[in-house]
Image (tube, rainbow, N blue to C red; front, side, top):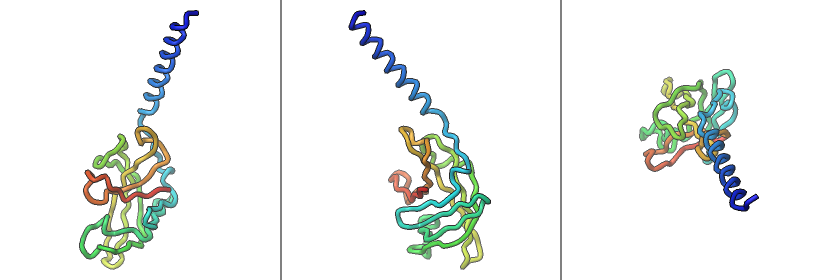
Length: 150
């Protein structure tokens, strides 16, 4: 067989494999509620525990990032709440439009607050597990996240 023919065939096979793998990676990720049950930790030591029954606990959360009122500056949020999966059209990255919404108790005011965490993943397109949960810390254009990983 001609050497050029072998090289051309090999190039075509490699190109075909690249196209196939690229298309497989472009598929929409399958995000299941079960993926999010458990403890999520941030770099600042905060912990969010999402329970199977839809309840959750928040420990040492930087409340100012969720609610930027002056009285929340340097305040740590330690409370309980509920959580569920929601469609989250704002803040979409990597084609993931699901989020985790937490409704939490504010004991001193006897009220509730809520926050929707966006979901980000790994891989070339960032749309594969393992997942992380985040909210923007300030202007999203700055790409600074308050992020939690399992």
